[in-house]
Amino acid sequence: MNDTDSNYDEREQSAIKHFVLRLYLEAATRILGSTRSFKYVDCCAGPWRASSSEHADTSFGIAFRTLEDAAIELAKRGIVPRFAALLIEKNAQAFVRLDAFAKRSNTSNFPVHAHNWDFTEKLADIVRFCSTPSTFPFIFIDPTGWQLAGISKIRPLLHLNPGEVLINLMSPFIGRFIKDNKTDFSDLLGLDFPSLRNLSGPALESAIVDKYCELVKREGKFEYVCSLPVMNPDMDSFNFHLIYATRHPKGIKVFKDVEKRTEEMTHKLRAKLQQNDRQSKSGNFELFSPDVQYRENCYQRLARTNQERAKAAVLTLIKAAPKVTYDACWAEALQFSTVYEPDLRGWIGTWERDGLIRVEGKAPKARVLQLGANITLVAVPQS
Image (cartoon, rainbow, N blue to C red; front, side, top):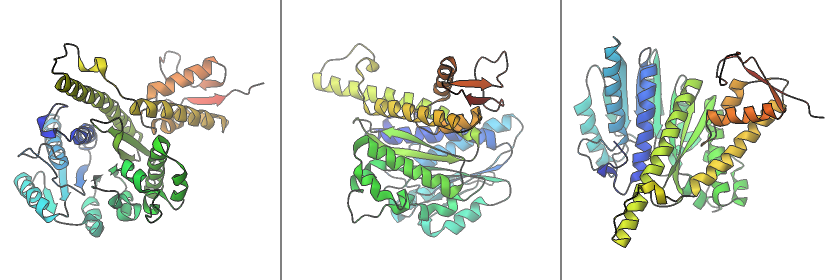
């Protein structure tokens, strides 16, 4: 799959979503596949609007082929991985195609199971599938609306430990309906969700994402929860946010790399679409690259806001205790979308030069601060 794949015409946001899924699974399976039984669970598999006869433009098709490729790579290292997939779809018509794919793909070395289930009614079965010894499950929840993302609907899946989840949160749709007093969003946003009705625009969308991440983190006792914004291909707005939860810093390191690469892919794809639209309207072919006239404000605004929020959160963390580890600051900062480790290092360098903090434990020859190097940050009292 690439950013110009014709299978994704007029649904480029799905191309971005599947790009995220593929990149993450490529890294995760190579890390975990050597020691654990890695199980992929797609709770709302579809397929929907798929145009590829081989299902190369579906989440389950992407996941299956990524795991297949990972198995080949691991085999070159003398490792025989244990992969399995559970594909679930409630819609009977869509399930016919899903079931045919599973039957074609199923092997003794890589079991692929498909079930015509409402996954919320089969949580015990999913948990059982994920709970065999030495198993690491990755749960993908990609509903068409917001109701199936409610905490009560997915609670047992969040409790799987070890395990990680990736959830599609349709934040713009939630924002449109949250001011409707008849709609209860407490399962998604907590009992205090009515307070969000005082917000609007980007502030409301950010608050919705923050609240949901907070609930997922608390319910699943996750150490880290990140959101990755996915833009509409032809509008200056977000289509949804992908919520990723993990208990290990390695997961965050991988996911932030995925986020950065997705950011680059998103702007490249949108720039090309904008150029195609200009050429279609003018009838003139543009000689320069698509990025020359690329325009967007939504992502830049989120980046500016999250940079300031993360920066303030880290500084507050440092000032609140006698000593704070770099690792703790890293965990605080990188859970904000559009914020990366070089940003954190830059802030710390500026604060150190300004005499606001002192960095302790950095090796004399170390060029940059590193995770897991026993580095601590100390706030310097200001006169």
